[in-house]
Length: 378
Ligand code: SAH
Image 1 (tube, rainbow, N blue to C red):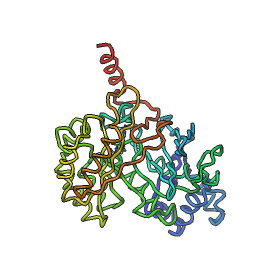
Image 2: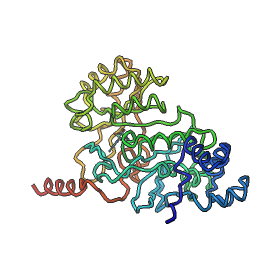
Image 3: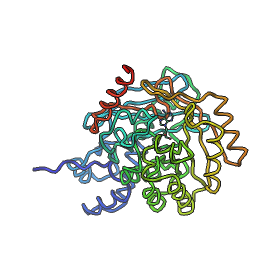
Image 4: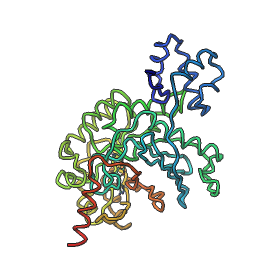
């Protein structure tokens, strides 16, 4: 029986070096192939004209380049673009491009669904199916850049006249899923994002967001010290246990200790803490005071995220005055704080609204639907 083709997009530089060594080729082949795929956007080995005919034939017989298929593109009135992408197994994930004056940020998914079950997140409601493969993660960046390039960077929407003429300059691993649960694949994909032969993004411009997988935060500092964001959302364990159930395993004190180690071990300046503003839940001045207290000795920046609602969820967004006051409390205690501008919410592309379409292996989505029906009927 013939072996299945090896996917060239599943390999970072090290893996590709090993692959070419294995078939008796020089390691500069890695540079050539990476540049073809990621810089020239050529995925047919036949068209990689600086490879010998024999090698092209051989790669043509034994390898492939698989990209997710674009099912739909949606454009927000603010220029944000959301792609629904179909994977080989039929599952669909979402990727979002957010153009700003000085940069273009791509929000990349790391899993099909999410297993963590944070109470305020739309992805959690959908349940969980599986980790994404390296090619499915790097493929999101390939596709976004290709779509933006084709349209002259004037956003991906040819109908729109936004003056955000730029490719992807920043990546945030903040789409569907918990990236540190899919550690090896996410690290390989981030290495490809930063590789000079590929997309060449600097470490500063790649951010990984985690709900707080403590041991993996330490591993990340050693293996791939990108910018780190942590979804904190509550200043004490009682409340965080409820909002981010992972807290029961890795409570706040352990998490903050890991963040300090990350800064010390990775050479990064600070950690960004995300804090979703939920009306009447975590947004009082006393929550702000407590938050400032726990972050006193952590090199931190706080990102306040106005909650993005979706159907069937009991939370509401804190009002603007409350959010401003929360920020001012933190600032007055010398905690660097910004309020994140909500982008793309008219097309459900904002933080926590990504859902995709896939088969939930945990049956959580069914349970959730049953529960919300019970609440509605009671
Ligand atoms: N699992 C990772 C990355 C995905 S979530 C993590 O937890 O960090 C990306 C960010 O969006 C997180 O800070 C998350 O808590 C936040 N978020 C989730 N749902 C949200 C919602 N409905 N409104 C605003 N932010 C939300």
